[in-house]
Structures are given as structure tokens and as C-alpha cells.
Amino acid sequence: MNRIKSLDGLRAISIILVLIGHCRPTMPPVLAQSLLFDILPGGALGVNIFFVISGYLITRLLIAEKNKTGRNSLKQFYLRRILRIFPVFYLYILVIILLKVFFMPDIINGFTTVAVAGLYLWNYAVFFHFDPGPIGGWFLGHFWSLAMEEQFYLLWPLAFVLAASLKKLKKAVVVIILLMPVIRVGSYFLVPMIRPEIGLMLHTAGDYILTGCLGALIEMSPEFEARYLKYVKSKLIVIVAFFCLLVIDPVLTHYFAGAYNLSVGMSANNLFILIILFWSMYVPSWFQRMLNKKLMVRIGLLSYSLYIWQQLILTPHMDTWLNKFPQNLVVVFLIALLSYHVVEKPVLRLKERFKAV
Image (cartoon, rainbow, N blue to C red; front, side, top):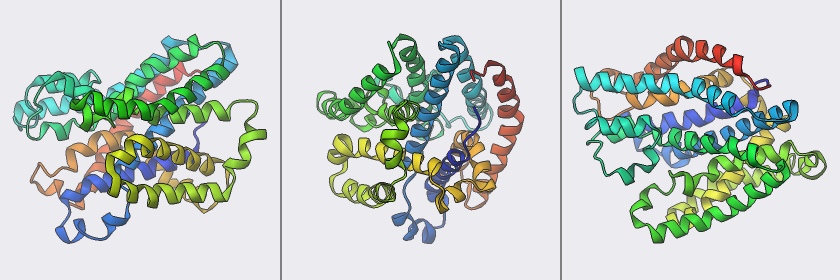
């Protein structure tokens, strides 16, 4: 399936939010404490957008494969996933190990930290009772999101194979999404030790990705144009989605914190992101034109490498000229360009051999 420019543009917005958020501790105080950071959404929203886009695109591909061939190949799915994620992911871990051995012994505290990250378990690290060290939690901490994705995509294609029909799968997804606030609140009270990580774990926050999956299941159903397209194109609905995501949610989070987020906020935000995702694809507008700009699409293409490598450079834990703002941003983009062209792009060409549709 062809790339969707608008979604590459949304990825660009997502990674820009992450980069700005992580840059803040490296900025001069006059900028870091400015009104800009009271207005801009945080990096967490950027990661949430990534999740919804990911669930939507992967499910779209799975549906297209099933419609074309009558089945889903688990072997090909997992091979494609490995080729997409593993090379840059494990290269970064190798760099962290080399830095520990030869230059920065305190960058991580022991190789248990590496094992938890490398086995895609960082979002459940609380159960392993290990100490990543005073700064190790930073340099590998962003792997919680990749851990959740890989755990999810270990299971999601199985759902396609086992489901009696896509209609029944869609109903099951709706039920799970509706149950997630109950699971989050229940986990908060029943398992106090995981409270700080409730937003990171698959069983309490997997609806980030599942909402995108639901979007694809709805879009590729026969009734989409007749029942749902008019809502996708509604200006009122998309204005409400933007307003709730950018204004109402930060206010409610400020005053009610976890009570709002665990019960309503996380689920509502996923829905608002999905609405904006559909609107950006289906409705010609200034927003779509901005997303489709060559620069935005290019940044979107680099978003995976940018996300992996930014944690090493946009850090307050290294006191070097390269780690200071604004040159740290330039360095991150240069490393991402190198990573994309030397590692990602050649492997992506190999991945095309296992293309489903």
C-alpha cells in the first residue's frame, strides 16, 4: 500500500512535540521557563499520536492482506516487523553498551538494564526490581513505548487469524476499549506498585494503539461511507476534537490529574486523535496542506530514527557543547539522517520482499 502523506505529516508533528519536550532541560532558563511551554502540548501527546497512527496503519495492512489473499501470514508479518524495528533499535543499545564500557561507566547500572530494554519489557520494569542507575532510566527510558508496541503486535495479528470475521473482531475491540478505563482504575487501587507506570503498560494503556486499529476496522468496513464519512468531514466535530485535546484536556489534567486521565482522559484523547487523523486524510484543508508539505513528510519519514537517537543527545545528563540547545537539535537530525540512509532504508528495501499487498 502507498504511503499516506498526511500521516507522515502527523508523525512529523508527533516527533517535533517529543523533541521540543526533551530539549527543554537543555535550553537557557529564559526559554525553558517561557510561556511557550505553557501553550505547547507535551511530548506525551506526540507519543499518543504515534500509537494511534501505528494501530491504524498496521490494521489497514492486515485487512488489505486478508481481503486480497483470504488469509494473514503470521510469518511474514513478524518478519516485516523485525526488519522495521530491530536494526536501529539494537544499534542504539549497542552504542549505549559501548559508551558504558569505554567512556561512560555510569550511563547504565549493570546489564540487567540492557536486558530489560532489549527484550521489550521496559514498560513492565517495575516487576523486575532492578536499578537502572541515576541516569540509566533516561537513556533507555523511551523504550517503554517500543516495548508496548511490540507486545501489542505480538498479539494483534493472532486476533486476525482467530477472529471469525472482521465484524466480530471490531465488536471485540470496542468492548476492550470500553473496558480499559475500568481496568486502569482497578489496577490503580488493586496494584499500588504500578501506579506510576499505568500509562505505560499494555494491559492498562493498550487502547492507545487499539483505537487506531478500530479506526481502520471502521474505515475498511462496507458501511463506512454511508454511516461514518459524514462525521469524518464534519468541521464541528474536528473543531471540538482539537479544542478538547489542546485546551480542555490540559485544564482537566491540571486540576484532576489521574482521577481524570485514568477514568476518561486517556480514552477520550485517543478518540480525538483518531478524529483528527481521519480529517487530515479525507478533508482538503490548510491542515492537510501543511501536513503534506515536503519538509513535514521528510521529517515524518525520519521520525523513527529521530525518536530512537534523540534520547542520547537531548539530555541534561551530558555536559558537552553538542548536548546544548540549539546545536543538539541539529546533531539529532544529522544522526537520524545517517541512521535512516545507512540502516533503515537498506533494510526497508529488504522488507519489501515480504510485503503483504
